[in-house]
Length: 334
Ligand code: PMV
Image (tube, rainbow, N blue to C red; front, side, top):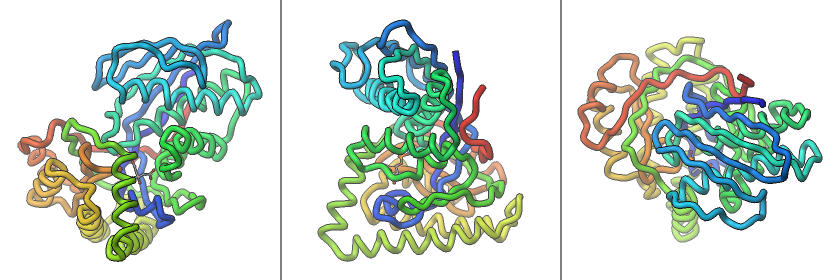
């Protein structure tokens, strides 16, 4: 039996634009997905999920390429259980050259699904790490990140960037532009996350931005402007000390506000995300923006005081609020 865990993330800057080669800066946060795998005597997969926010379920089915399992669970959950885990197990089998090994897989996650906190990336990264070790094949972090990217890419019909999977594997703050991925310094930033209890459809939202960008030059300019905001932000993060100064936090917040406005213009925000962003700003946060694909899910704000947390608790659109510590460690064995 092998157990591995990997963190979720918030986007400081750059979601959506990263799909077109602009840089993005996601930061890993201390909310982890933990995956335990055990080899079976046959070639089947049994996936059991115990998400803190959804009722658990179990499915057993033939390995990759098999028929979809016949169980009564919402599609999104099934996709999370079968699609991502399947693709990750496939990568571990490929790495170990063991195509016919079956596994019992147990997933426990504190990261809400589809809410912009990188739940699927964390599950994929932890599954690849655990399953490859169970097959006596040790992968280094770069290889886990590469194989996790291929898994997401396959499940998301080629619309995934490397941002989520690289960040979850490496931990800390990272910079991703196309294939060029690296860690930045890890200043302790005062992240506050607000969650509306909902989720966006990443594929649909990415396709929507692509259509806008194809139709209007100014939408393409908006994507490029997000790239400019990210380049400013990454320099600030790189130059920051272990504990970011008030001045740095304030400038990062301004850039996050700008980034949110540009995402709003691309049509990927929502009323509840905007409400939470404004509640945070009015409470005195240095800045706030949606994180991830948008459409619903989470916002991230910067505020070292309790004011934003209190304001979000009182915001009807906000279902849950928590302070998110930066996870300096990425994937690890438990
Ligand atoms: O909502 P998430 O955590 O799946 O993030 C999606 C980020 C996008 O830039 C919209 C897509 C991607 O793969 O980078």
